[in-house]
Amino acid sequence: MVVAYRYGSLVIAGIGMGWAVVFAAIGWWGVVALDLAIIASGLSIYMLIRQGHFAFGLLAAQAALMAIAVTMGLLLDPPTADAPRVTHIYLLVVAALGYLNYQREKTRAQLVLIGLCLAGFVVLASAPLHNPYTVPMPDTVRSAGTWANTILATSLLAGAIYAMQAEFSRKDKFSRDLAAALWNDEFHLVYQPQVDLARTTIGAEALLRWTSPQRGPISPAEFIPQAEKSGLMVGIGGWVLEKSCQTLAAWGKHPDFRHLTLSVNVSASQLLHEDFEETVREALVSTCADPRRLILELTESVLVTEMDLVIAKLDALHEMGITISLDDFGTGYSALSYLRRLPIQQLKIDRGFVQDAASTSRSASLVSNVVRIGRDLGHNVLAEGVETMEQHSLLARAGCTLFQGYFYGRPMTLSDFELRIEAEANGVISIARSADA
Image (cartoon, rainbow, N blue to C red):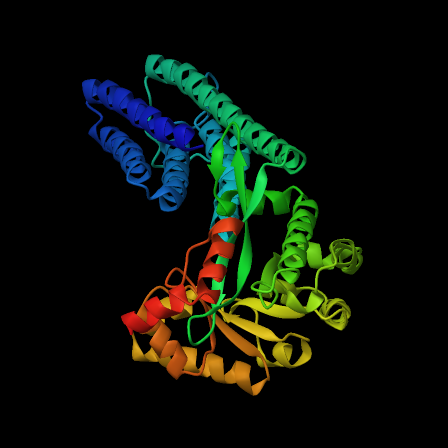
């Protein structure tokens, strides 16, 4: 898609330059000015995309090209008995590229631009729309322009369709690779420590990672949304839950590990699946894991679903002994009315609040209030994304007692995490921390 827009913008600039030369030779400087606007738009779009302003560049490109196509259709390309209007075909190109962009990021502005392009195409294709500002063209120029614009617009439309098909094929292949990864054991878990006020490790969050033989390591920010769209998250989430329960069961047999908790992320699609509670129960029974050491983290997106159904499911999970945590608290749909009704036992303060807390007094006050709300409701409060001692101290003064972030440890392999716990049990880390203090 990036390639399509980048080179498409250069083609548009080239078209404007070609017509500018033609009309400059005729001496029609008003039309040359319009062609210069086309050139400037094409080059500006190219530079925006090249400099990384992709989202803005795409929307600006569509708006500019739509305006230029409509202007040309009204002023330079009215239908005659000998030549039809053809410049409106460019509106289909813009609409096609807009739809491709909409698949990447669904925004209302993008839908509006697509609708305007299609409406403009229908109007320009169906009505002559003669006006007193029409620029009369010599027959030879008009005939050549009709052929040239039809060929160029059709070629660009074919390119847009090819880019669209390539993007859909890539996503389909990506989804197939995701499904295969589950069966080929390409996923693995890493563990990020969670600590208490004394910075002693009390548990971890299990984080999913994917290393593809063909693609290499793939960011969770890329594959998890695609897994959700493809309906694969229930299966992948079930694998994460099974592996996590196996880890908890193994920890329960080790005196240095049996106190540890393990947090597992659960998506809204997982939670709302009809067999989710039974899947959790089977994972606990088959592995003999202690449900009291398992924490299921839910994002606030579950709050926009059927609340009564969510509450019933969470009640069933809590009856098993599982702790329910609300992740990224404060960024989405949470409200006190929801918190009073939901059977949750832990709140995780979003990392965005934590990052800002040490920089402004307003953010620090907000974090303090979030901690106070959680404690007043009887919930444990854990702050994630802590990266500095300043943030840790501020959160501790606010009343927070549980923490997670790079300041305490990055996500690590299971063996490295267990070595960390053994070192703490032997007093190695605590001695080092006392020396730092």
